[in-house]
Length: 119
Image 1: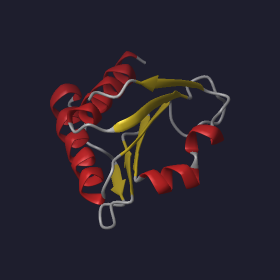
Image 2: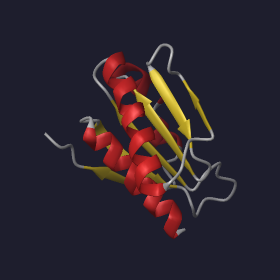
Image 3: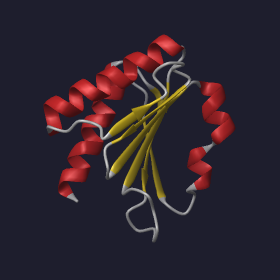
């Protein structure tokens, strides 16, 4: 679990580095049948920023935690980029897609922690 927390902290650091907005961590470790231990969700203001956020997460997680994503999807349109680190799933959205899919509400039984925006 300690390695997972290190990974989550590195993801958050990467998102904050490029000024990701409305970052939340979703602790799913106590839910039976959960697909991962944590999800980290955030948004960017443009497709360019969404791409920059995923690049920053990739770089910082690789440097700080020595991990690379098992898979990534959504880079082409950069409306919603998903990064799978096994125990941690990262979702980087445009605001409209985040509102539409409302992942935080889907996992309302889990512990959700809002990370303050860095301005």
